[in-house]
Image (tube, rainbow, N blue to C red):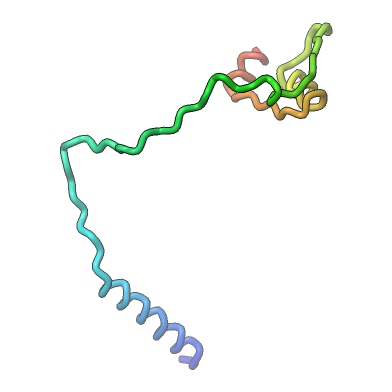
Length: 93
């Protein structure tokens, strides 16, 4: 074996033996539900209107697809629009 291979093997054995020596907590099964006592922050519905872009969009052309509408909103208002796959599937059928 080459010296480099021997050295790599020694390093690997050292890492494995170090991991074996470190004690890890035992897995504990419990039948009681665990509840996080830290409250989830709420989102305020009273967002001031000045936080929204000032743009008005009129869609007068028939046959626009959802992606085309999203592109127009993004271009005019600077707001990225993303549609979920199920919404796009409904629009294509």
